[in-house]
Image 1 (tube, protein in one colour):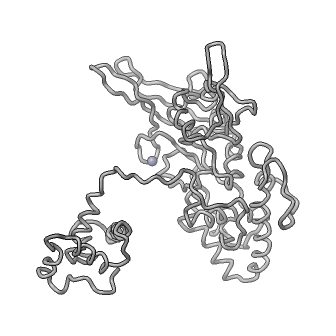
Image 2: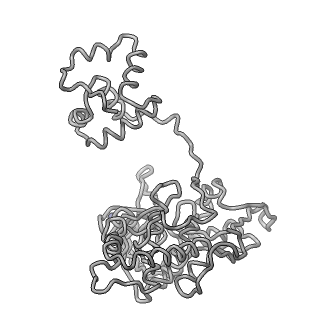
Image 3: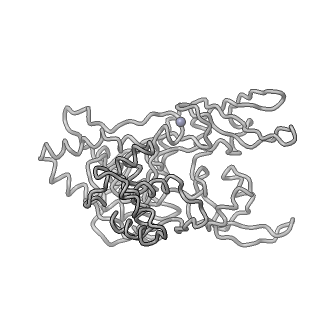
Length: 411
Ligand SMILES: [Zn+2]
């Protein structure tokens, strides 16, 4: 993909309108035609092949009832931070409640007008903008941008202002005011993320409660910040989400199976709740399911990831470099699992002994093998017996009955 120009290579692109045009558009003056054309070409090829095979069509439509399709991708969600400084009494309908002279909670009316203002992606001026201006646009304090600045989200230079030297920030892509580092969605999801606000019905309004947390310093309450009260689980959370589904390729082309209303794409609950209640799906290029999910959501479950050519700019890279936490304390539970395994207990017995699931023990076992650089229980045991000065594990086998000894094929 090249920025600012349309790529001319690749398969021919069908005439575009509506959904597809929004798919094309990405960033400032930049077009994504690679993903768009790959989806169009794959859809026309595969649908032409399978549309006559009723069983195959039914199998693919059944994916729409699966758990995965009921989870909204993060790029489809409007996210609102409780501490967003743009939620202010002059511009948002807020009803405060006080206790002992301090504000305890507020009822905030989030309507379409407010959400359009505070959830829209933020673009910085090409000539750069002062730190304070950027912070104001994103609804945070200047010091709250320090992590994003350290993480390299912005390019910076110092500029002389009347109060001394001020940082001027530049950013080539759109920013998300609600993401932790203010980074926007992955560009593969830009078609859905950028237009999310536009899908909000004009008459939408919801009253959401937020509470102020306090800490007490010498008996004096000091405000720590706002938290939303999730409408689903009533927990205090920093960010709430409103899923807004985008049109998929099948709907765009009007692909519909007669008399099968059961297989409609699942509509998402149009209400604010926390990420756990909505089971928001986060996209990662490193995750082996990421591409398949993107294709499934973009085509209404009718295509699989393997049937669509990945765009040229696709790279399975991490956004943040891997950094091992070498000084982190060891998992106590894992040590227990390791000890019981080496005493000769099977996975099921370890799970029963510790009161955890078999899957949990298997997860610990995988990490234990990886840490020890071994691939089987025998290798692990040989290593442990060899390293143990008093042969603790070697003697232990004598005490363990035959029935609980590990089977040779267990790894
Ligand atoms: Zn919740």
